[in-house]
Structures are given as C-alpha cells and as structure tokens.
Image (cartoon, rainbow, N blue to C red):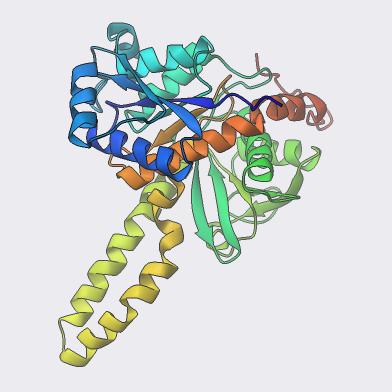
Length: 351
C-alpha cells in the first residue's frame, strides 16, 4: 500500500525581524520534530538562505530552496508592495501555493501584506465577504479564539456573522471543541445593547445554527464564557495589544517588588517557575501563528519577532490546518446555515 505524499509547506524565509536565521532554524526544528514528515520550501534570497544552511551543517533534510530577489519589509504599504515587489519572497511563495505546488504558506512578515496576498492571490472561500485573522487568549476554561484581531476595522453585520461561522468551524476542527460556544463582544449582556451593527449581528447569530450564547462583556473574556468571541477589528486589535503587554507588565511589577527587600526577592525567586508555567498560555510562541480564515488555501501569519520555536509551531499549525480541509467545511457551514432576517430586515449576501 502506497503511503500518502508528504505535505509541502512554503516558508517565507525573509519575512520576520530575524530572517532568515530564525525561519531556517524553526524549519529545521519542525522537520526534526516530525521526523521529516513534510517537505519544506524555503523562499527568499537563495545565496543567503544556503549560507545559513551551510553554517548549521544541514544535510539530508526534506527541503528545497526557491529564489526570490525582493523582500517586503514591515514599513512597506501592503497592497503597494505586492504590486511593486512581484519577486518578493511573500509573492513568490504565495503563488507557489496558489499554483498547487505547495499545500500551505507560512510567514512572520508584514501582516497586512500577508493578508492582502492571501486574499488577492489565493482568493476567497465561497460565501466569505472578508477573510479574517484571530487571536488566541487564555481563560479560566482554556483558550478561546477572538475574531477579528485587527484585519477588518470597519465591519458590517454580515462580516461579523461570517467571522462567527469561521471561528466556530476552526475551533471545532483544530482545537477539538465538540460544540463550540460563540459570543458577541458588547458593552452589556442585554440583546439591545451596543451599536446598530452589533444589534443586527445579534439577531443574525441567534437565528443561525451556531451555538450562540449571547453577548459577553470585557470582564467575561478571561472567565472563559465562550470558545469563540466575535468583534470588529478595531476592538479586537486593542484587546490583542493590551493582552500582549500583560506578561511584561507583571514581570516589571515583580522586579520592583523584589528590590524592596531580601525576603521579597526570595519569594519572587520561588515564584518564578510557577509563574512562568501559569503564563504559558499567554506566550505567542506556543501558538506560533494564526490562520487567515476565509481564503482558498492555508496561510499562517506569525509575529514579526518570532523565535525559531514560534516558526516551528507555525509550521506545525500549517500542517494541522492543511490536513483538516477546513476551507471546505467553512464553505459548507456558510451555505447550510444562513441567518434568518428579522421581520422587515434585509440581510446583504457576501459577493
């Protein structure tokens, strides 16, 4: 019996702040952890990539190198960069995926550019008006997914509904929540709270096939009241950036506390490992990256300062998502469970 062909993962080797060193190290770690269970395609400046591979004494691994002469930086305008830098590692790598020469794409580069390339080159899943990216947050009940995390600042109710569907499918298939709960982030629990768009979204969600539990407030997030929390990208990005600041804030407070006396310094020393373990869920390296949901492919976006460990976990996430065939399930969910309009209300359909 023939074994299944290995999945092919494109790695944007020039994307992150520490490229290509971290990208190459993370790729090699992923290959080692999976015992060469996939084929890595490193895209970027070939001579520079091969020089790093030589320094690490790499041989016999399941990888190939594809040359791309240009790099899209964090300062570049996302859409303009794609038009002006057609031979960038991002554009070349994404086209490999779009042409069927790879099964997934991974990048720690310019988030806006990766999102634009994912949408423009891969195209959208049928029924999706706007692709989205989310963020994972820890809670008392485990990790929950927040959508949108900054991709779409201005949203219509239809878009928020689609985020809920895509998020629900994702956490069910990837995070293995059997009946994922979905909530709408609002300024109060009552149905008629919030803006007109949020209220319209509420009506769409309550008549959908989703396991919708209603509105949640900011104080409910870390309590873990829902597996998927939906909001527009403006609110989501504020929450994300605030959450990213919490670990460093706690560390600075503990350091200040330790400086006030020997016993306090001793207590902080004893607390260090337990505290590190308890905050593990807040470490982006553990998740590596998040998928662009709603595009015809698998595109994983990581933090610009991703370490080799984070790159490794991005690749492992790409493998998991590619195997799940999640896009087909998102399309089916959007087609089978359309929201029922309230009396006298017309709901726009995404084109």
